[in-house]
Length: 124
Image (cartoon, rainbow, N blue to C red):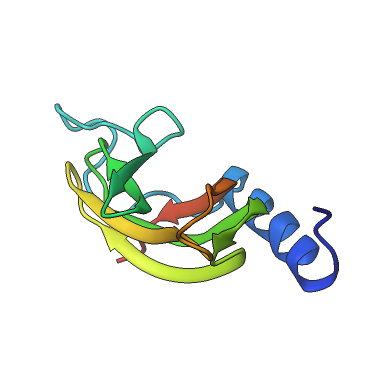
């Protein structure tokens, strides 16, 4: 399934947001003992199965709050929703948060999808 129009624009915007960290992270000074910078290694996502749905969770293993700014559900086969999901969900240091849930459009059929997500350091 090809992504077109607004969904393609959203995909590009989400990809750009995930790699562009222009503002310094809010929170402890990097010189502070115990400081763990937010990065693609310390801010991670996983998908869990629950009650026929696939739940996307983001875990923040850094010592700085982050904000999940969006999820893009793509390459959908019988999946709902499919497309860009704009968000502004803060995830505190050391915490995890549910950010989206994908279910089959027709529960009698299998479903599949791919997802990407974007985040930034929280501004205080």
